[in-house]
Structure formats: C-alpha cells, structure tokens
Amino acid sequence: MIANYGYKDGSGEYYISIDTDKCIDCAAERACLTACPKNMFEIITDDYDDEVAWVKKECTRALAYDCAGCKPAAGYTSLPCASACTPGAIKHSW
Amino acid sequence: MNAEVAAATAPEKKEFWRWQENTWFDESKNWKDAKIITCGIDVGSVSSQAVIVCDGELYGYNSMRTGNNSPDSAKNALAGIMDKIGMKLEDINYVVGTGYGRVNVPFAHKAITEIACHARGANYMGGSKVRTILDMGGQDCKAIHCDEKGKVTNFLMNDKCAAGTGRGMEVISDLMQIPIAELGPRSFEVDEEPEAVSSICVVFAKSEALALLKAGYTKNKVIAAYCQAMAERVVSLLERIGVEEGFFITGGIAKNPGVVKRIEKLLGIKAVDTKIDSQIAGALGAALFGYTLMQKQGAKAA
Image (cartoon, rainbow over all chains, first blue to last red; front, side, top):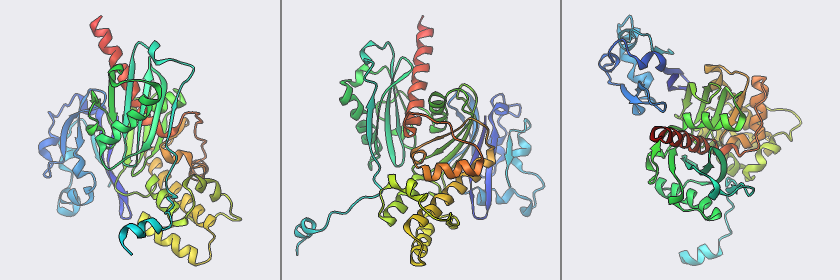
C-alpha cells in the first residue's frame, strides 16, 4: 500500500509517501526512526496486521515546516529519511 | 424581558443544515437466524453510523449526527438500530469501531481506520469492480485506491481544512437558508454555469458567497459556484493518486447531485451507482472486517 501523509494548501503539496509493501520486511532495520531529526516516524501495526512505518499524526499537518531543515535550502543534498530507507519506501512530494 | 420569556417568544430558528437521520433494516430477514452477527460503528466528526451485518450480509443500520461526546454518539447510534430490531448488545458477536472517534467506542473489540473500512464498504456496495473511492466526509476528504477484494493499495487524506467537505456544505446551506437536501438540485437551476468560488477556505468561501449575493447573483447561482468549487478541490486530490474506472463516492456529499455530477464531468467518469446509503460505507466496512475476523477465529478454533 502507498500511504500519503500530509496536505495540500495554497503554497503547494506536502506529502510523505510510504510504500508499505517495501516497508514490511525492512532491509534498513527501521533506520527511518533515528534518521529523522524531528522524530516524525514510528512503527505501527496497520489494518492488515503488518508492521509498517507511518508519519505520526501530530506531524502530518506541519510537514512544510518540520521538513524544511532537511531540504536543499538548509544545505542538505539528500533527505536523511529517504537516504536511510534503503528499500526506497519513503518519498517526498516537494 | 428575562431570558425565559425571550426564549419562549423568540421565533424558532430553522436549522437548514440539518440532514435527514435514518434507520433501516431488511424486513425480509430475521437476525435471529444468523450464525455470526457483527457490528461496525463509525463515529465521524459530523455523523455517526452503526451497521449490523448478519453472516456477512448487510442487515440494518442507523445514521445520526455525532454529539459532543464520542462514546455517547457510538452508544446512541447502536441503540437506534438495536431498539428497532429488538437486539441486545450481547447478541452481537464482534464490534469494530472506526472513524474519527474509533478509539472511543466503549464496547468495540477492535478499532480500524476509516480508510480501510471505506474501501471495504465500497467494495461491498459497488462490487469488486470498484477501484477508486472518494470519501467526502464531514470534516475531511479521502482519495483511496483498492484492489478487487477492497484492500487499500494507495490513499491520500486531506484533513487540514474543511474545504471540500460536508461541513462546508452545511455552512453554505445555513447561509443561503436553503435545506441542505435541496442544494444539489437547485445548483442546476441556473441559466449559465458560474465560475467556481475561488477561496480554498470555508470561512473565506462564506465571505465570497455573501459578496456574490450582494453583487446580484441569485442563490442558485451562488450554490452552483460553491458546488463547482468543491468538485474542483476533490478532483485535484483524486488526480494526485490517479483515477481508475470503477469510481465510487462514499460519505454524505455523495447524496448531493450538484457536487457528484460536477465531479463526474471534471473526471469524465461516471460514479458507480448503489442503492445503499453512501453514508454508511465506513461502518459497513467495519462490520465486514468484524465478520472476517470472526470467521478467522472460528477457523482457528476448529
């Protein structure tokens, strides 16, 4: 399942997409949990009884601000969360 | 004049936004003949539904407005159908809670997200051909893709603002002083289709609607402009995950042809028809999840 967490507003689309099919058998040993400086990810058991990562509910409405520190404007060339996720399950829409 | 006298003499305030609450059950069947009875309770931000499923088939439901307390809303929704069919809580084998208040359903055995439940409910209501689901809820809007079994493959939720939701429509209904059920039909009673309301926020859209009235727009024209705006907003949400044939709309707004027909026109796809109330999709899906879980437990016990 591809789960899109985030929102769209007048300034753009801010979604973190997690491909949970790649996430179930994590080859990166849940590295996303520690890679995100804002601690936005956690592991949950989804509706189909699979253990997957998701973006914490309290973080989904402020992604434009919370993720800004990891974007190219802040000096990063790649996103820490996406780089840590070697199966390539995490993507940002902006 | 004291407050009591003022209240007694004040003209009754009409609640134009108030939609019809309803209860239904299948009179051709008797729930006492069922082997497995499951219940799904969807406590949404605006409406609550309780659905009874007997041996995997829809038996009855109750749909009502959510109160200011989620546990009470769940209890009242379930009591509404149980009283009608003479059922008691102990007659139900499994209860699944879903929706915004799913963790506050006091007698639920399990809580499942409304995303999974709407997909499952839509799969039952529209058949296995359903692939894209638009759930237009009271205060959020979801675009969901599912497979032929109703399992979610992709979803997108907009819960940051009320634009494109039932609550937004209720606000316009009250502003226009037109019953909410009449908004859809009246939105087509215009000589020329107006431009959509441009504001993306319900609060600003309300101001814009007022400004249009002052500028000489008829009420029907303002409603048409608002319905078009809602349709454009949800279509942009749908387009992000892609729309496939087998398009199904759930939630209260599915009952508003003014929005539905405009969405269909923008997408170039007709929504799948169903005779079941679109508003119960989440609770129905929850009850069906309960049935599957009971079957699994039975299989394990055997």
